[in-house]
Length: 489
Ligand SMILES: Cc1cc2nc3c(=O)[nH]c(=O)nc-3n(C[C@H](O)[C@H](O)[C@H](O)COP(=O)(O)OP(=O)(O)OC[C@H]3O[C@@H](n4cnc5c(N)ncnc54)[C@H](O)[C@@H]3O)c2cc1C
Image 1 (cartoon, rainbow, N blue to C red):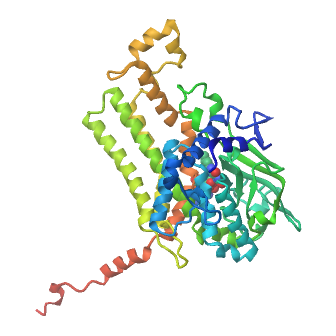
Image 2 (cartoon, rainbow, N blue to C red):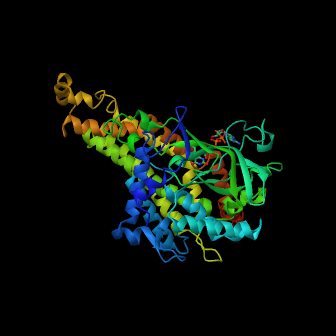
């Protein structure tokens, strides 16, 4: 198994990541990425621990060695449950705060490999490529991130009608041994600390956009791949007491520029094919497996969220207040709905003719469609409950250390049930979760990680069983006459 230190060592590979106008020499040493990379390393160590073998691994059919369950193609409901327990273990280790851990994109490649005949419509070689690449990811425990949305340069025009045809990542040259990609893709969360970037397009494409209708993979350190992360929050997280989450779990989101990147044919899975570019999301279970992991992670985060709220109520002395309990009851109801929707993905998952299990599309997309609004609603409930508790805090840990300030802080900032330091630690955790730049980015993440909500709602519309609903209405309109209507007198 790959260990955390194997993973960390492999990241120092000459990749081009830029922060504050400078190229980062080694992401494992740079303040922006060091702790996030160590958080991922811990996940590898958890999976490699011998006592976790059954929960975290299955046997590779090719090598006979244990490999991450994230790469297990589910063929039964028990297999999907096993994938859930795997992802839950990793999500609990990161409190659901790292969305694109290696198990996310692993799910997409499981989906492609499980139904590679779909990609074979573009040529059998592409289907063979995707299976071989899936096996390479699986047998080497690799971490893929992905960039599947083009940049918001001008959404009113299709890809090929942008002011410059090489703004969106697309093919600019074909060679005997592969293709050359140029252009940008707007986001790869975790890209800077992953092994491989999966480039594809989930945005609707139209005739003329063929150059952008690809699915392929490139190593993060491939010549010409450049990553421009947004402001990394770990840089401003001065210490772990004041920023317990930003300092450890900022997976970062990077703009990805492909500057004439060579991709060998073996790493190309869809090539200039508009139909397959769309079908990869609908006719394979890729989007379902990847987002099943996303919901496992989200449910873990919701449990963490409600735990923070409950601990804060205890600290402020409000936990026994009936009005507070009713509000917490509403929060608990939303969390429970998400917990049970996750089980519904599994329980109502059909198995196709080839024996591959597909998590319920309708259950998955319904949960995702409302997440955009409900996540904000849940955070509002917590803000309401806490009053000024996350604000009436010392300026930093140093106020506990200075002789001039420590006495006042310790005397007045305590709670009835704990000393000041314990209370402040909890409230800083809550603020980092809800109000810091890290917390705010998380709200944006939950709104958009699975696509804009209008798109997800269209997906629900397409997958909902309207025939059954309509049949009820038709039956009601065709009820037999009342006895009084048929009375002869
Ligand atoms: C924190 C974060 C992390 C992300 N991580 C990744 C990642 O790892 N990999 C990746 O590929 N992508 C990632 N994404 C990108 C994500 O996939 C996109 O943001 C998402 O698909 C939405 O696309 P967009 O941002 O281009 O919004 P747009 O499509 O430009 O839409 C923006 C808004 O415009 C309005 N709008 C636009 N068109 C319509 C319409 N037809 N009908 C109604 N309203 C409309 C809606 O209000 C919509 O929300 C991430 C995004 C965020 C915020």
